[in-house]
Amino acid sequence: MIFFYYFLVWMVHLFGAIPLFLLSLFKSRYKNSLKARFFLHKNFHQEPADVHFHACSLGEVKSIEGLVLNFDSRVSVITQTGFDAAKKFCKKLNFLAFESLLPFWLKPCKVLILFEAEYWLMLVFTAKLKGAKIFLINARISDKSYKSYLRFAFFYRKIFSYIDQVFAQSAQDAQRLENLGAKNIEIFGNLKSRLRPEPSKILPKFKEKLIIFASTHRGEEELLLRHFTLKDNEKLILAPRHPERFLELENLLFKLTLPFDKFSDVGQDLQAGFKCPVLLLDALGELVNFYAISDVVVLGGSFVRGVGGHNPIEAAAFDNCIISGVHIHNQKSLFDEVEGVYFCEDLREFDARVHSACVKAKIRTIQGLEGMVERIRSAL
Image (tube, rainbow, N blue to C red; front, side, top):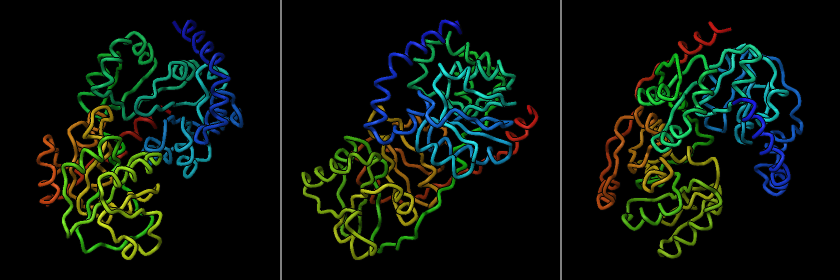
């Protein structure tokens, strides 16, 4: 199976090389990552290390920082945002080469640690061939993904045959992983729940009640706004998940005849510049700063099907009232770490719930990383 799979990934690599190269030229966010992963541009060299951590992108990379700093570590990532986050705490850093290149590219390590759902057959096979113990941490399988995993169970059983230790997010994840052939499974919770966001600036607190529709997706803003009436003593911030939708939100607010300011136009004096009842947060990296001064956070990605919710930890860290939709299948373990979230099943109740919200969400007490660190250390 390994040799047949390796032949297939080489075919994918060869046929996809030209389109991927062109994509790296015209899409700025792929400029470095695609060239590094598929053509090894500035990516030939790997520093020697005892422990190799592999994570995908920004949130995953932030979650492993506390572990990485305990060992002689190197880190590999998939995305540019993950790379930028990892270089803040690890000098031994690479984009992960594509699977066809891994047998030649991957340098030996004593322990390979995969984060969440980074199931790369050639990565685990090559690492095991070169003598590594392999850990899978923060492992999860969502409701939506489980059926797909079962359809290709023979493939995942092969991957799990090379993995020595699994730390699962929940009992349900542990059972699903075991059904797919995983062994030596421990339930550890979600590492992302250990992250505590820090505001990059201190914003002034408003005299009005501040409500945020946070990390919303296409269709959610209009759905929520049509079931919500802003009162005189309230201000609303719209913070879409993807920056390419800023103009779309402007057009929606014009359509609904809602007066609004844009954060990019407000300037330094937020109190003076935010005159309209609604503010469009058309900037990256500012949401946490507004969480710190808000009263009610409506978490997007959960009122429409297909997204699976977003991390509630950031909002809960600032004593906010949190309202969420019920479609949170990708974030169940994180919501389990937070008490006091109101789940709105019927949007006819949404308006009243936002205006009357008074129960503040609290993050549950969670265990430290010491147990996981010791298990990794014992494998060295």
